[in-house]
Image (cartoon, rainbow, N blue to C red; front, side):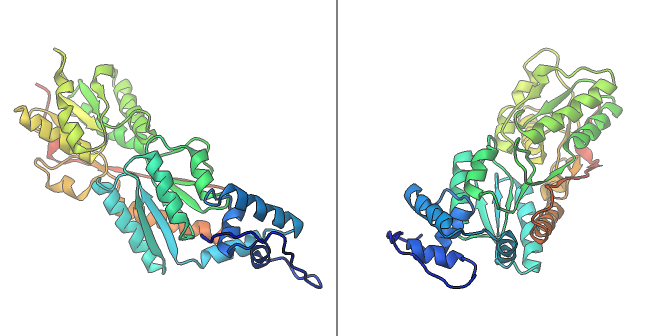
Length: 353
């Protein structure tokens, strides 16, 4: 960012009907062209006094924002930002690989940021990435994200694709998996194997993806005339460490579940570790399902029954959707739901005793 030394008194005369440009405004105010562009995009990176001087000059010179030209310039940028909420989750590592592969094939460089599920860090990461003026953003929001705060950073003209988590009030493109149908299929599979006491394990209920997966679980139980017991709907961070630590909560009461539909694969793998440490055999004494089909799921002990979400392909799909947005920036926001399929392995082989 420039030092923004004030030269607001300067005026730029021009003859004829030549259109006022960003350079004209920048020279008149004494700031960089990048600073004027940030003001036009509504970015909070410009301090209040500088913003006021730029906006006053825009009005004085009757600057007209050329959306078409701006969109064309953004399409020629060579970078796209990818911001992930949890890179420790193998699903998102594979998703990021798919994004980078697809964007690289189109000549773009991927700028990667990780928020660690912190909305505060997310704001800082996005602000830093904005300084590199990427042509667009693929964002998997941190838990607790606020659409209005994101818009303050990204500006009103940003090309943004949200992945995985819905944000109320966000009017950007959105890509997700069919979370409800996936959890429904997993729960129905366990019911068909004879289970009647089935838990839902992991994730945070406030998250849109967890809420949708719980809904699918409850739908399958209701169709079978079974009840979803609140004490068997156990929240945990979506990682294996906390899942393993909270395994005992499944067995706190006299009536215990014989199976669990897990929020995702890392939770399922953590639960299987927790079961094993208690002398309970996953797939033998207790049935477990996951969601995502990360690479490790096939080689886990026992191999994990899960929903195929194909994270690498979802990454390629996210890149394609963002590139589509760059080609048609004024199209209405799109909501895309990717189907999932149940992959049955040995972890769900256990039958109720």
